[in-house]
Image (cartoon, rainbow, N blue to C red; front, side):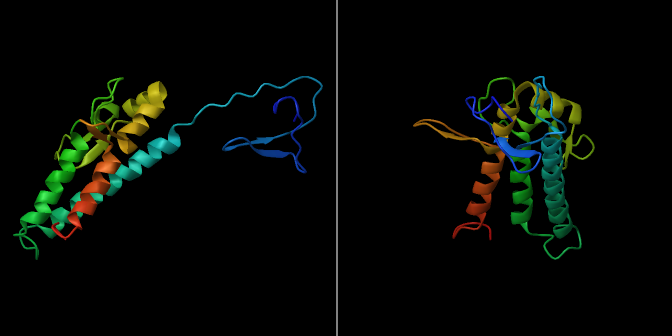
Length: 175
């Protein structure tokens, strides 16, 4: 593979060239006298799958709390579990800082409270794919962002959940 690395050849003992571009493997099929053009595009399907897994995990937690606090359940009168469910719901459906591009909540990228029961989440995959296509990095920030200035802290949803779990497990926490 010539002409890529500042003009220096990139050599492999096989026909595969790995990590010339981080995370990409090139497979040379045949030698050619003419230059080949390679186009690399991001595939949002892995991110949609990750979002689907996130939503399924959240919904499983909601189901577990609902079962644990049901009418005849051992923890039926435990207000702490219902408070946890409410706090998690607020984290999932509320605004997540002042972001540009209109992505200021999970709902703005297609992850919202289920219209039937309002406690579970659902995904509008078309809206999520559109958000990923228009600004993948901004979508990622909704989950992971942690910005702190002297007057404002903006935290993505995953960081909020992690902080809440740490708080719940602390000396003064729920567990």
